[in-house]
Image (spheres, rainbow, N blue to C red):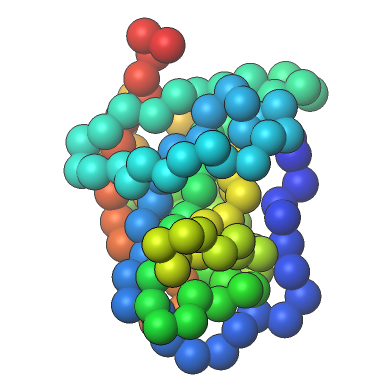
Length: 139
């Protein structure tokens, strides 16, 4: 599993919005996200197998606001359909400024025994977002 692109001192302040995107095979190979596409309710995501055999889903976060933090204080948790937490990652992540004024993170890889449907909740600074997703096994 690739290590998180972490930083040491989360930026203080607030953000206007947080969004969740999915990472794919290119990001698992170490490439930065080429584009950011936000996940919407009900989207499918790829379950990828890492170099050490673990199955995981990669999430990319995007934050918007007057000054997107360069070190994002975030907590990402995955829940099954009954609301039981399967796994979580709470590590401050570096953000990278985008031409539109937002900031995106590198992929955060979260290994777990993913059920076919699940939800992911991201708490970033002072905003929270939950998406109900499913595994896209066709890819």
